[in-house]
Length: 250
Image (cartoon, rainbow, N blue to C red; front, side, top):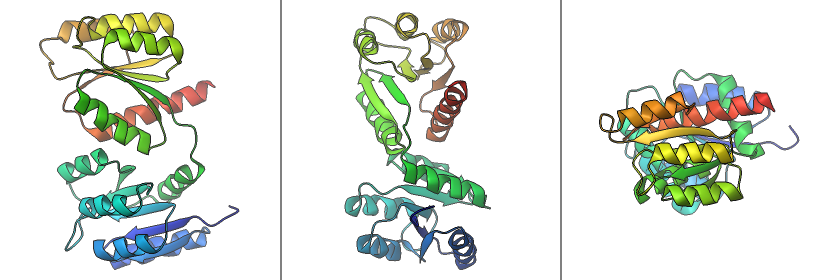
């Protein structure tokens, strides 16, 4: 690599920090260690990092709170949360705040290196359209997906989605099943005619009430359906999976 990527490891487990630091330095990265959230904040104030690996459970201030404070100093910071524990609520909160993702201990160092390179290269993300009349869902998905390098469009009705899709060829479209005027199934079928290559993921908070619409969408080759409130990790996994498949085709 031409220029050393800078990496900050924030974790109160000194053994993990040393092991991770030793391995990454051997691969050519410039590594800094912070033993807790407050030290991480100080390091980030001093200089920007290409990637920050942040343990979720730390003494004094957990990783999510640390990340929230880091964003105020470095809004562009790319933070990957780390955990060895079942802390789903904190994981969900971190992703909703815009954390790049979550990796689980024991760490796969090759995966760590891959994540660093992804963050550095700022590769073209997927072009994603979110179709939902719930502003909260739109904002949450936008915060998470844009942080990971994707380009996002938002439509709050089927008509708006159709008009938008005529202007841009989206790779992935999230469609709420219950939309005003035109429902999600009808919206999907119309979008499919405009861009047959787009991959649609249906969304709903009403599993039973719209089961027939979801079934028809899946039979018409929608990729899957996410049921609200859905896990952000699952949503990101689907986006990565679809993006990888599209790249293989190309």
